[in-house]
Amino acid sequence: MREGLLQIFQEIYRDLRPGAPVPELAVEFFAFVNLNNTIRMRQGKLLVRLSDLLQGAPEAVLRAIAHILLAKMYRRPIERAHATRYRRYVSGQDISRKAHLVRQVRGRKRIESPQGRTYNLEKVFDDLNQRFFYGLLARPRMTWSRDHARNRLGHYDPAHNAIVVSRIFDHPRVPGYAVEYIVYHEMLHLKHPVKLRGSRRCVHSAEFQAEEKLFPRLDQAKAFLKQL
Ligand SMILES: [Zn+2]
Image (cartoon, rainbow, N blue to C red):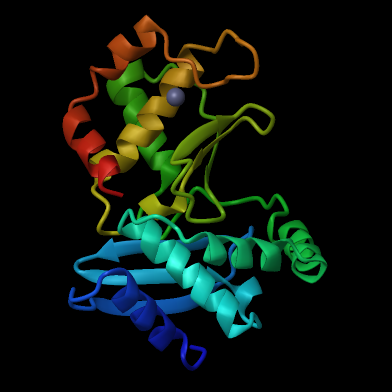
């Protein structure tokens, strides 16, 4: 880890929450597809991932992103000076060009395997197909997403006839019913094709919603997704 990065986050934390004990912190650079930065709390520990495109950033920029992430985490207003400094830096020619290249290289469509480290999506699909659809649904390609997307947990990609599930679910700490729920939801999209309304794809008709309620551990699954 870059020297001083942890100290920066600790200092900004103290500025933002004077008097509050500084939690355990881990800050790392990560090879996201896009210029992403993430922060989350796990068992009292703050985990920060900064885009590796920021690796050479000046200290003031790292302070700015530390402020932005911590302010978001603790729902504090983001100081304009920090927001501006960060935005200027990442929209600068040098960084935008790098970000563009990285997106091209890392974002390339790859053939992904349904076999994750913990869960096999084809098995999940086949099992649900038997239990809820009399085995009648044709299985599309099942793939884990490349990145650990939190904004898109699962989706059906009609262009590739693929159900894509966010890789964050491929973990032993994730209960089986949560993965099943994500896949089940996408299977309902297969069963109830969307009547396109404008550009919106994810339309949940009354029949869709009624059928979703048949999922046995719906409340638990939704509660699990909520705390992600
Ligand atoms: Zn949906």
